[in-house]
Structure formats: structure tokens, C-alpha cells
Length: 366
Image (cartoon, rainbow, N blue to C red; front, side):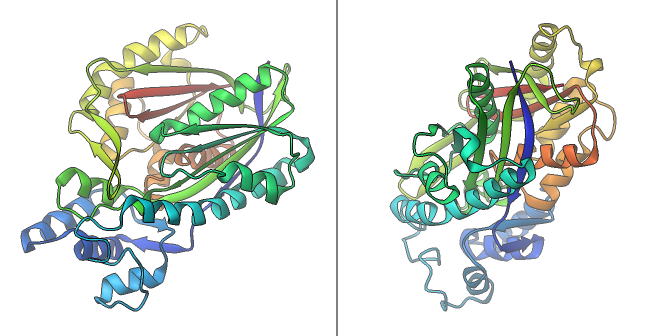
């Protein structure tokens, strides 16, 4: 039994930061010397990102750019001390703002799949940027009119490849006899903005954004002919890589670290594992027509393309989503999937994501 996607939807917050706005925010919150301002500009303009959406609101952005205090936001400099708001304050924002984005994406996916809410037997929620209970899953049940006995599973704190883990769960549910499965990934990375000048934190500030995505899948033995049927999943934790990418709960939000060695680890370890994994399906890298790679940043995409020997343009959709929306963590790969589906991209397709561990997660679509 396989999982066939029958509908997908995405959602973004209203506030948009272009490169200049992102740079102004970074200078207001994370710059203490003119030299750091120069470095910040290089980081922002070299990120490959043209725009990002955040949930914190245009009134806060206006304050940060103008040096005013009109919004009264707890995210203004100095309000929560030198490290910014405390983690509890950040979680209150997550609890209030995550569900509306998740609901918007889920409603689109249900509508596009022509699936009535009563048909959903299982929901899988994915998030690494916040904790709340009752959480997003309960809001989905309440506001979408799902059955009160719908099966709920949450995939938490898995990082950028979390949606791949969520799809693995959905595929397992389909194999176990589920009806229609709703998978929803939502991340509010902006609530964890770093207020210090540590280089790794500044890089994280330049990359991450907010968004949500959802898909509806159904169990199938004989695919309808559409290429978006999940045939298999795989994962690998690269040895000796525990410190390369971390996601740690601190007193002032969750702290992301991205080590300089991440691209080289991908270059060294990705190809041997992918070759072995694909062989289990009777496939080789050269058989894969479409690649959907989570854009952790330009260097990660470059390292992936180099490691796998991909032709020029193979990761254009991944680069375009990064440019348009930044790295939204787990939903990002579903934004890429939506574009590929809409463009009529061919199968087989391999989807890849990288997360703390350093972990590789993969999905095969045919």
C-alpha cells in the first residue's frame, strides 16, 4: 500500500521582508559595531533570499527600521534584556500565531483534494519551533470539523527534514489501513530571532522565515497515473556529525547552529548512502528525473548537486523557493513539492532534507 497525494496547500504570513528590510532588522537587533554592519550586509545579500515572510507584524518591522517604539512589541530591543524575549514569551507568540497559518494551508489542501473533513481519519502535525498543548492538532480538529475520534500524531523538534518524517508516518498509516491522511507542517522561525552577534546566529537570522504547508494523502494499491505517490522513505545519521547542526532550547528562544562543516559532510557522505538506498528500489541516481532538496542555504544546495553529480538546473525549484520565501524549516520541502506538481515535473522524484544529527531524510515518489 502506498500514499498518493491528492491535494496540497501552502500559507504565508502577511509581513514580507525584502533584503533591505531584513538588513535593517538585523542591524537594529544584532549589530554593535560598524564592522559588523558590513559583515551583516554580505551575509544577507549572499543568502540567495530575495524575500521572507514573518508572523511578527509590519508594525514591529516599522519600529525596528525607524528606531521607534510605537508597536509596544516585546520583540523590540531591550524589552526582554540583551538576549531578546524570554522563551516563555516567544512560546506565547507561537501558541497564538501558528494555528491560523496551519489552518489556512490545511483548508487549501482539503479543497484542492475535493476531500470532505469527515473523510480524514488521521492527522500528522509537524513543527520544531514551538510547543503548546493543546496544540495545533486540536485546533485543526475544532476548526476544520474533523471527527472527534480522528487519530492524531505529532512529529516535533526534527528540524528542517520534519515534513519528510511526517510523510513517513502518513505512509505507514496508509499501509495500516487509514483513509485520508492530513499532514500539516507549520514553523514560526522568526520568534527565535537571535539578538547577539555570534556569527552562526547571524547566519541563522539571515536564512529563516515562517510558513505552513499541508497535504492530503490516500492509500492506494494502483496509483491513478499521477506521479506523486510515495513509494518509500529512508534516513541516515552521518557519523561524527552531532555538533554540525544543532537546535537547542535556551533561555531566550531556541538556538540554531550551522557548522561550517555541513556542506563538506554532505559532499562526503550523501552519495554513498543515496546509491545504497536507491538500489533497494532497483534504481540509480541516473534514473531520477526530478530532485526536491530542502534549501538549507545556497552552500547546502551546491554541496548536494556536486555530491550527486546533478545536471545544471536540477535544483532550480529549490533555489527559487529559497529566493522567494527563505528557509521556513519543515514546510519548505512541501512548497517545493507544490511547485513541482503544478509544473508537471516527472517521476521518479527524490526528496531530500537535512537536520540535526547531522541527519539525512529522503523520500521516493513515483
